[in-house]
Image 1 (spheres, rainbow, N blue to C red):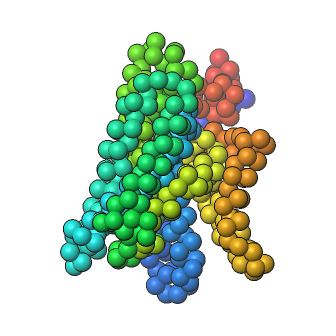
Image 2: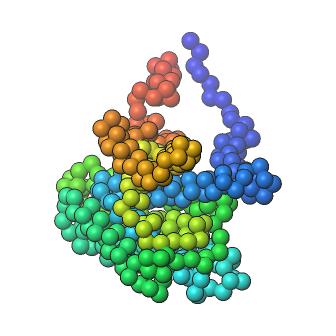
Image 3: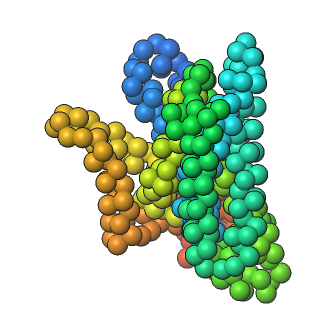
Length: 356
């Protein structure tokens, strides 16, 4: 039997393999700008796509805590509210109207930073203990933020706050979704991310292996809140009106449904969960409107869907699997090299047997 000869891969194939994802992202970004401008995508579809992007950011942010770290947070709507109100106040009161389009990324980042600062305040007492205390503390935090906003007349109180220009468009949303996925992927596959995964598997064993469990928890929680604040800033500049009742426990429940629908511990699952859930909610809204039923029944759908997922599909659509393009090349190679049953290793073993 002839020994297999290694084939030299053409330079063009190597170039395409390395840069195809970048080309694809550039093409999608161009389409997000061209399609709404030319009228191929009507304003309604454009709005739905923007909300899908915002929900993707929210789902990834919550998945970092509930999925990858194995904790349970139910108050991420509070961090979203902080990002939304901070960015809105900056746009209306601080930044001149002429500079708003140019400083919009700065406004979004500041909204995320403020949410992260408050998350740091919440995290220190929460992670002193173990168990379900984080769920209790984050739920209380969500209620405190909502009540505090309702009692501050300077920012509209229960009436809400408006006056923001519509800065959030489809290209900007796509850019922030890509940044979020990039940051989350690099975070998960970093040394800190490995510490997060070790906490989920066995916190006691992770502590014995010199993982600073409290520091890892705090940093992950702050990073998660930062992303939720970014989503809140984008949401405020899309809706152009925000009010406290838009950031209740019902909003946090929507995030939980998207996380568990897509799959805990999976960035690709977060994307799929957000896409499917947003489309289903929009379809349900149209059905209720056509049937002449109150839209309030939509609020019943999310808790029912969460209960159904917990009973029949707790791992979600993706489970804990990940799309290959979201895994760094070194990690993919390591997984193949460590798997003796992979096709590549089976062929390598056959070649070594022939040589011997």
